Image (cartoon, rainbow, N blue to C red; front, side):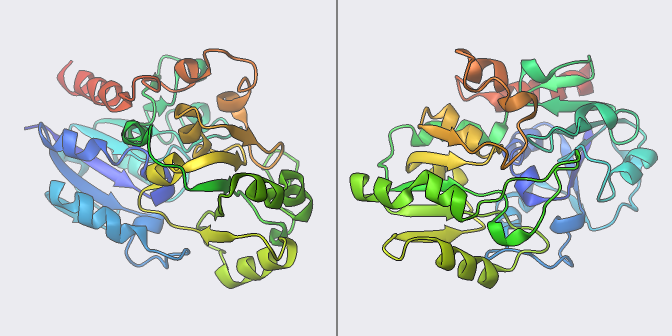
Length: 320
């Protein structure tokens, strides 16, 4: 059997492709390298260490697990990395490779990692859909984790969902392009008018936050308490094992431009993107105007079979 080295660095990036692991293990021998946030020595920033979920679900499929880049790269026929950014050890892995290395999209971004990482972080890079493709080394393969959304197409609705990028207590947060993100502050939350929506619909509000290295949950909770109406029935989540279910149970979604918002769009749940609170990139630039948005943006998005596209390309690379 041919051997694949799977390199994972950050759960909220890698979780989009983790469901391919059992499929790969049916045909290939797999080894795993855990770096950055996925390294057990890294302090988990959120409220539920999702590395435990990863280990419970996926470690059984790997023959060897390493927490270092110092492995014997000559043993592998293909390397898959969960990110395409030139950080967290990925350029070093690329420099030591002895075979083709395929990276995966970091997500919705305007930094062009799917181009700039060529020959420094990857040989080829998976992107979400055809409209992102600008070169022959970019492979549209959708979002394999989103295939499970089909289970939640008709699930009972339970909440209004707000997906936050940065809260108003974050200070100035650079986009990396010479500007700053608009923060989810009192003005933004007042603009959504959650209390009125709640009174009209009867649904509680769920606020979904991101786990970041500088996350301070208590400060975030205090800030939200200071700006949200006292009467509002809401809860706050950081780490969620099944975000497909979370999205499926949403009656409507208000979100920063974010890869997570693609889930509600695939399920055709009303989804409002808050301008300037995230990066749109090619992924969201035609969200309001493209009648074929899902088809053009997410390979396999209409039929929930992105995994098939992903696995087929891996097999082509390994088998010629």
